[in-house]
Image (cartoon, rainbow, N blue to C red; front, side, top):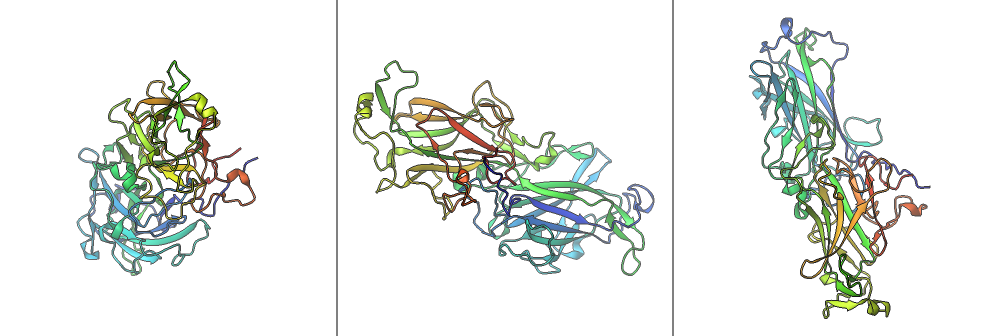
Length: 489
């Protein structure tokens, strides 16, 4: 029986963001008395705790290349945005200016002051552009002590300039950026639906998420909170503006992930619909294809009616080639005839591709090798690729969600094989691509070795899919932040 493997960094992709307030303070409902929304008195406000769970590695590389299905991240910055709800006119959310100085927290603007923790700030620092910088710290546990063994980075932020009787929306975005640079150029902003956000932020340049050359992921969360005036609660008896309830945000990955890990890749195949099965054609490339292309996505996904599906589909029934494997560089790639006979294969001609000068190397998906982890280890004569994919929730027509397409030199399709799953709770071939899920064609649970996390259990070792078999089985991890081993019984 296979096991559930829970890593010590089980919540490596979850970033917890919670706010502290005085639970014993008297409550004055927003809009009543001195705590009304029209009051402009500005005093020091709430203090927030920020906790980053898991092994965020502090790497300033602009993206985290995937080498396995492990639940980890390299978040080195958190950007905070704060919005204020204006009921009149129009029930609008107004983005608040985050001042770079404490004295700038007037007229509706706020300032964020770093109080304690182990991010790359000193106590008393004002967060420029609302960004908390973790880029030069690695897996330390200084500052605020933690009782949660999964949390290894914590910090406290003071918000200065809150107004009383106001509903605020706090948005936290976790990412990896060089010199704290926010990796996305522009957004379309938020829209209001009554007193809640309807859609979230739609990215204008999702290429940094989808392309091999700039593989990027993003984490996000949001929460609303009302404020009131706690009369005389200040250290010198002054009024203090606080939150009526504690906002709590848990940042989660906003995209999905996929890897492909193959062995026994055939050099020749008959045409799938051909009458002459004795003629075999040389396989030049293999494509991993999704039956739909998502071109954009909304975040934080939790704002949507169904947060699993935050991808935006602009045009239906447009396939997306997720990965391409080019076999022309294989160790034993034939350079002569493009066709042979089935009898020649039976007589002992090369049947499968091998890689490397000694015939025991590896092949990578086009564009992946330049972005792969430095410590990536694979079984010999295997092909590998991994990337992020934008979610989508419709089963366009009756086509299989993922397929493998084998092609000739002239891009003629030889064979299309469905990628199916036998996991309970999932449709065999029309499964969804869901936010924060991981789709694994072949098993690889860690980057720096071919044995799994448990040295005594062979069930979690590398298990590339044999393309010489009759089925291509997909493992779906619907708890990517928690479960390491997707082979669970």
